[in-house]
Image (cartoon, rainbow, N blue to C red; front, side):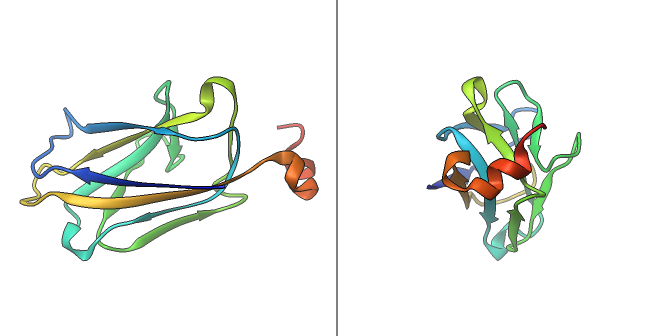
Length: 128
């Protein structure tokens, strides 16, 4: 399953009051994702993803952020693996652009599979 979201971060959105969007996803395992931004972001747009309890998901390190320059940011299994179950089926997108003079739209895409659909994936993720 593929889920795609186009999110516009308004110019001058402060870090202290970021844009927050809830991304509705289905149960399964995120095995691939990408963030696409335009070159116009020029390093002035920042974002990260958390679960609904504010635990960092992408990037995984605490306090990590993506600084957008127009590059495509990609994550692939197994480094980006995140299982969506129960209360963890939705993610929060947090974005800000304190010094940007224009609004910027970025695209997030997630590819999700069910464990049962790929037996090899089920074996790899068991016991975690």
